[in-house]
Amino acid sequence: MAEEIGLFEAMKTMRAMRRLRPDPVPEALLWRVIEAATKAPSGGDRQPWHFVVVRQPEAKRFIQERYQAALQRYAEAGMKAMAEGRLALSETDLDRRLRTARAGLYLAEHLAEVPVLLFACVDRASAIEVAGGAGDISGIYASIYPAVQNILLACRGLGLGAVLTTLHLLYEDEIKTRLSIP
Image (cartoon, rainbow, N blue to C red; front, side, top):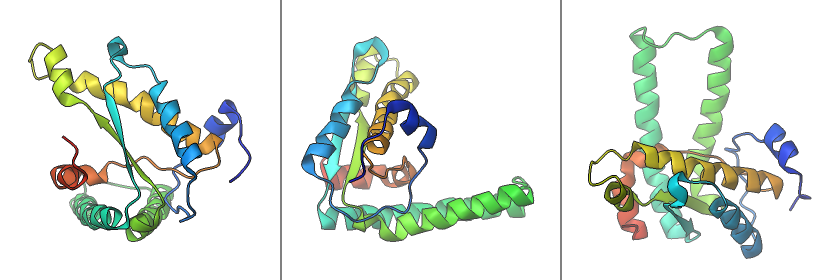
């Protein structure tokens, strides 16, 4: 592992790492990352989060298959938008997006090789209860993202690669069932 770096250096140098190495992540480092997440602020100090660690190869392959299918759907929607003229890109934008797309494809093809998948989950049932059953839980997501940012910063500070992705949410129900997430 790389030497630890300070917060502002981590913020300045952090980027989405989609080409992740398969090197094992020591348990102690993983717990430091999760602890950093739990120190994030949340609305009403409710801390409506749960973290699910996935290391099992079969579970990672299951998630990878859904991730690849989600990426395919995402790419098709983007290509359709460009063909219909709803998404116009300059040459610079196109080059940047192609680089990102290649890195995203690499991640999709190698997701099961990543040593740890860490899911940050929001307790939606609790959010609805607090909202008086009103059903508007949009604010709950404002409470999870500071925790996710702490995860990303902690990973960067500890020399671990990390990326925030939500593509798997297209298959959220299947993944939740597989991982026994309520």
